[in-house]
Image 1 (cartoon, rainbow, N blue to C red):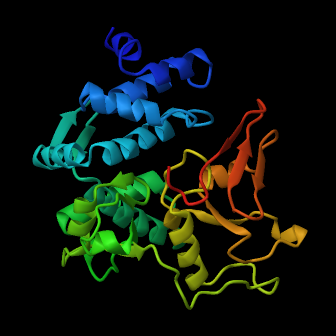
Image 2 (cartoon, rainbow, N blue to C red):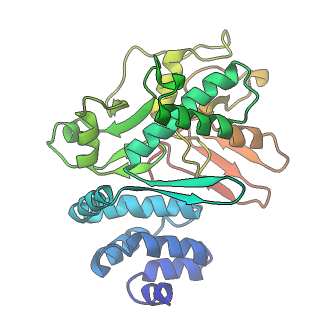
Image 3 (cartoon, helix red, strand yellow):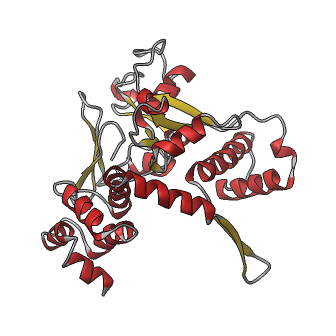
Amino acid sequence: MALADALTSYLPCTLAAMEAGLIDEYAASRVFEATACASKEVAAEVDARLVGRFENRNPPALRRLVNSLLMRVDPEGYERRRQEKVAARRLEIRHGDHGSSTLFAELPSDRAQALYAACDRDALAKKRQGDKRTMDQLRLDALVEHCLGGHGCAGKPKAQIFVHIDLPTLLGLRDNPAELAGCGGISPEMARAIAFDADSVWNRIIDEPMTGLPIDLGRKNYRPPSAMRKYLHVTHRTCSMPGCTRPAQYTDLDHATAWKDSGRTDKANMRPLCRVHHLLRDEPGWTFTTDSETGVLTVTAPNGRSYAEDSTGFV
């Protein structure tokens, strides 16, 4: 009832997109839920800015876009709600059957991303050493070790977390939204707080040309060096698969034109794909096409529908 009321009153563009078959009811509910925290006037402005941007976005990608627009339309309200969420952070435990329990944590996105990255890093290190546990098992066991002071905490480098922010915003001269890789848009206040935290585990990525990085390795090397890997992690930010939010630093680097087909190991031909979508590329019926000029990946599913995202990784 609440969704129907919103669509027929202050979300007319979302309703029109649903009627045109661009989105389904579930995707429309993502728009409604994301804007329910704001006033109807703000929600209506966000709805208007969605025109022309519904097509080929799955529900998670659409909700991230709505959150990004909310931050631009109502930055003060966004920051107030963010601070309220921080104040309401909590950890819950729910005991289940057969000696198993579930922990639920609601916490700031940068802290959640850092915790996951640290556990993923430790899990990957053990997997490379031949550990037979699954990655999910290894991540959970790493979390337990970290929390209980196990050996997994000692002598480890900090996890790789990327926060993208422009220089004027970092200096407090502007208040442009920033981005936490794998999460999406964050407020400039939150980005600056992370930047100047002495205990921060982030990598600050300022939007200026970066020097000293390799441009082209030609056909001599199959695997890119660490400098190029970091460059690709920075520029792509997440898995190149449209709608996937896995941070680029936890993905495989894939040759758009396959190495066996004379594909080069350079920044134009390399792109990050998480393991699931890397394997999906070889499945029958799926087509992965990369624009040679913009680097934008377009994925065509077996049903013939194509999906693409902005070349910058921003919504």
